[in-house]
Length: 174
Image (cartoon, rainbow, N blue to C red; front, side):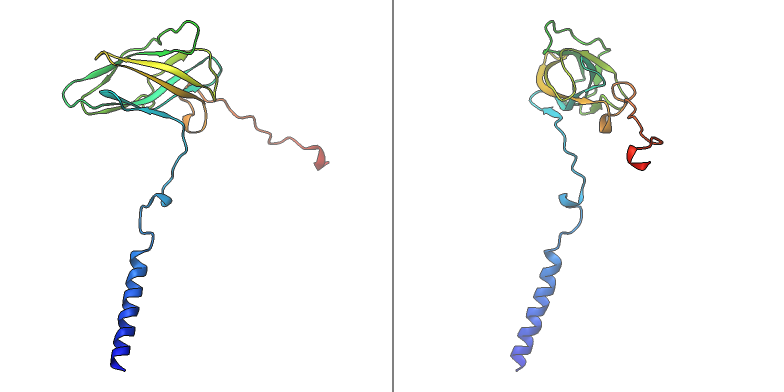
């Protein structure tokens, strides 16, 4: 009888402790926001190009946005060229070189560097671009053109204001 009671108590204690260990816990992926994005990354060179997109308010023009991470711990680097290759006559965008200190990351959206690009594209398209650096590296990527709104609002100038239908009466309300 004593053996059964000890076995029952041990089994109950194991069951209770196992329930605590098998719970979801804290900070699991199912508890965090996971934004769905088609932003593209390239980590093949000395400078990583992360979350690259073109934010566009109207077809044919937009703003190049990405984060640039300098993997070198000794050498500074600069992004010197961005060219949309999807147009008939690819022309590099005009902008001041973007310096990336050793071992640091530069987000082109914060503060906005306003790198304007042009080409035959519209929101929803994927276009091929070339990004040149002063260390001689060139990164070619196919990136998405996204609308100037939502998470990308105001990155290609002021985001378009959505039309409001407040105050309008519908025909079924009469």
